[in-house]
Image (cartoon, rainbow, N blue to C red):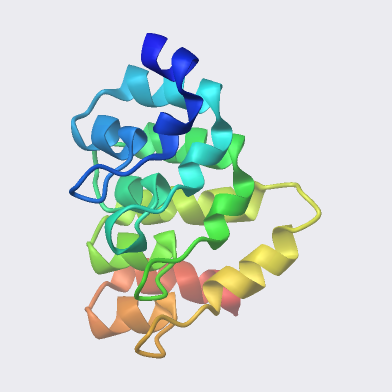
Length: 157
């Protein structure tokens, strides 16, 4: 905390492994540190680390940080639009990593978010294509994930 008080820009610096302090805290399961960093600067959710992964992407790739997904989207709703170097949204990452609960959380947030951008986000995010030209639905179907596919079908159609 003292270091951040003296040099606030350090909070966005990447280490030699391409990780920011919030990435490191997240990967080491230091949830309280992650939350503290979010209080310092909510936009830290959008800091891109190795391979363009943001903390939201990292949380979507595991089953350990479901509660943080909600926190990240609460402090920085625009982070739902962030993509990796492979042009993957957090939804793509959750499906690709077979993290159904994380995927459900992200979809639920998209459905319940009452902002003016909700319809745009739903349409844009659900139709977003990764570098291979695949939407989240394509990824779910091609990796044989019927639960994720069914959720997407119910939203889209």
